Length: 167
Image 1 (cartoon, rainbow, N blue to C red):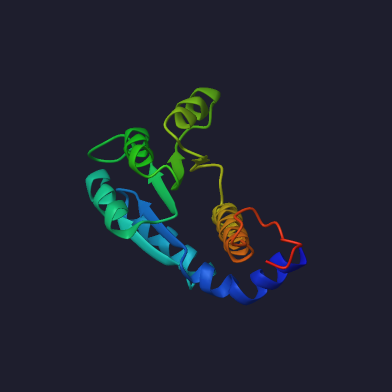
Image 2: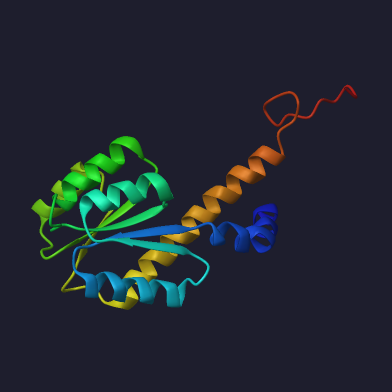
């Protein structure tokens, strides 16, 4: 645990600098506002925006974000259908979908499409979204650090065991 803390202290800036966010929303004002809010709180993150599902899909392929925000009502495709397409090719990407409604049916549909976070536009504040991103970003940093720590502690014997016979 102490080793993880030390690695987080020294490596967190580099890992958090690599955090990439894509916002896919046909509402230009909302898209730009969310982008500015995210940049204000996470200035080291790379943030890109798309105004349609097809543009968003191209940017996912070219940009490789860790987190994608998708509005459920896009001009050319349903946000849920876009989430399915993204998850089919990039299962590691975390998807948060903005919806006008928060019901058990919407949550179930979102989950079936691979959406990890359903965000009701009317009920969530900017602070709620920033807190969500912060928790996702921290989880990405910790999992990356754990992976780095495990790789660095590997022995030539393959399973982190230490040979006692001097070899």
